[in-house]
Figure 1 (cartoon, rainbow, N blue to C red):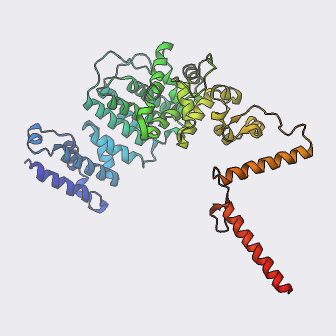
Figure 2 (figure 1 turned 90 degrees about the horizontal axis):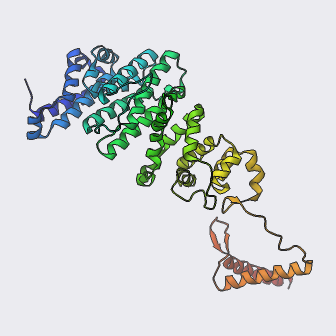
Figure 3 (figure 1 turned 120 degrees about the horizontal axis):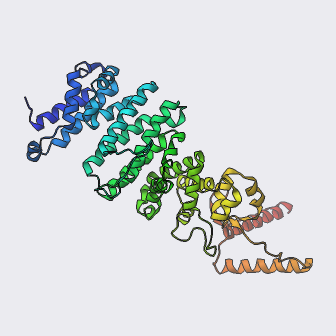
Length: 441
């Protein structure tokens, strides 16, 4: 019996609310109930949707109810794995991802990663070459929006499962599994998609998953037979975010850019080949030294500009990436960025070089200024006193003409004009003198 879309939507909404109560889950953790919810999540009836326009609504309600059931019940988690609910597209993948984040069983985690990786391969029709090398046809038609959305759900679930893996020690078998996943993710960075927004979203989630993988497994980003081809894969990671896109992100700059900067930094620290390649692309040999480091449209210029960004996280990420590409050599770092731009990072790291230059750094400009001659050199004491009086008269004139207004801090901690305080003090002194004279009389 098929329910009307409106009735089905109300029923699923009720089930979603009931599924939050762990004591009321018994009817919902049977095989039939789990499979029914999974089927409703992906079922489409164009005729009914056109007439009532409720299809997407009740599919989301079924998805939420299924997530609650699997999240709140260990038995439902076991049955979902046995029933291979992943065949019902993204519904159970997402649910399994939620449950796996609370699981301490590494074998279950690896099994889920393997299953999701296989599903992602099938979704994007991955073609394999040699070991850990995906053959990406850049001339192929762009991936449709439905397939891209499906891949996005897989990537989100993979991140939920693997977000803590980079902090774990993995054995050789697990490392091979994550290298296999990294190769598929490399393909996700390159595959063409319908619409720039979809492509940016796919690449953004791909970078998030790459950031969660063990660093030792990221070598596959460059470990292909043809060196030039391998460069293309990593080239996408940084070019996507730096070539003309930074300005478009606006308030989402931190959300979009910080994961990429961190990924490139950690990869450069862990793999010498990655650092060499990125340094060639971002910090080529200096030729035009007449312009400031932050001027221009090169990758180096854009990163140096980010070093003075108002967001401290963005500023720190950009500075650390450049510092790592310079092999953490302060002289080389200053050479490419300038003392003014490098001052923040050097001060935070408290390097010996910064401590030596600290007294000579102008706090206003943030850089080492040329030493200026002592203006008092060769003057007698009388000439110095005369110069001091001349400066005082100049300040008084500026103050009288209200060009400047000297300020001071009052007893209650507020700023107030010094002239007002001076008058108040003068009045107090006069009153005290009058009191003293009256007392003497």
